[in-house]
Amino acid sequence: SQQGEEDPQALSIQEGENATMNCSYKTSINNLQWYRQNSGRGLVHLILIRSNEREKHSGRLRVTLDTSKKSSSLLITASRAADTASYFCATDRQYGNKLVFGAGTILRVKS
Amino acid sequence: EAQVTQNPRYLITVTGKKLTVTCSQNMNHEYMSWYRQDPGLGLRQIYYSMNVEVTDKGDVPEGYKVSRKEKRNFPLILESPSPNQTSLYFCASSAGRTSYEQYFGPGTRLTVT
Image 1: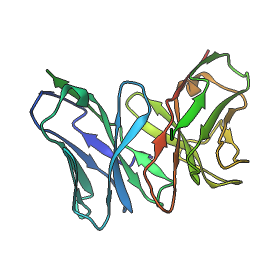
Image 2: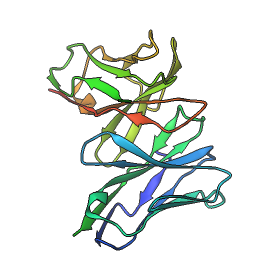
Image 3: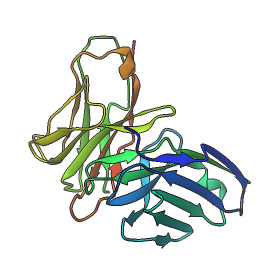
């Protein structure tokens, strides 16, 4: 079953602009993670936010979590062409061994 | 270098011919998983393992088998592949109780004709 659903499906912005991607999920979670995938390659972990956290930062990344709305957002500030990739949220219901991924958001950053 | 390796990276096979995709990690991770990725569906978990000799089904286990005889290895076995198993497969590992982030292998692109 697909737990997380990302929105939008695709996003195209200019270099330097901010990119915001949203993720909604259906059941309670222990943590939510965001991953990046460059064209057909393995996923790379970006950031994890626990269910008792509301906001987390890592470099140019800012993640928020609203457990009452069962939603999360990923903000990439001052985007670069190298940020072009697919971004996936993954909900973790069993402390690390049962991640459920959404279908992803394709981000294109134009230089 | 900490990594997850998969072999082969590309495989074209015919229906019914048994195959194994190997996965190995050098980080002494307890947790390992297999996923398949299909367009528009994201990644779906096939099987996971929390430790040696401990495996359990994910969301799409039909047609697959796994084994975990050693901590570092977690092979995926397709006893009788079918065309609907054509997909991009990823192995992943995580430390488990101390860290939940997953490290992914480079992927195996499988085509079953």
